[in-house]
Length: 114
Image 1: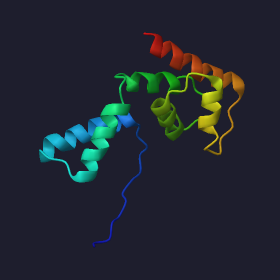
Image 2 (image 1 turned 90 degrees about the horizontal axis):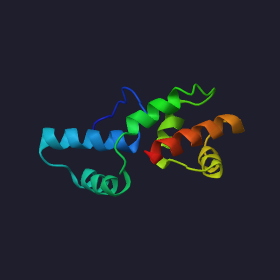
Image 3 (image 1 turned 180 degrees about the vertical axis):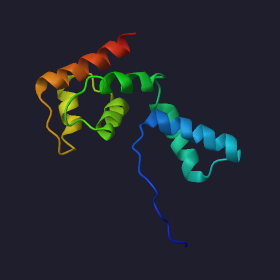
């Protein structure tokens, strides 16, 4: 097997992945086994449409120490309570104060009320 060289790493959320798989499907007209399984999973999980809008709203909060990869994971999981968000962020070495976490949860809840 040839040596694989990673040119860049960019975090994406499930909704971006779904769009990328659609592009690949159009280009190649057929997906391989693993991509088909991923597409089936995404059809079940990635249901809300405007994930970019939610991503932008969370980024505009300008929360210190919150990186793009964290925001993508928040968009994927969409925690609706403070405890769910705390649980989600425990997987990372990041500390965010309760006021900032409340802002994130409020934005998510407002987004899903629409």
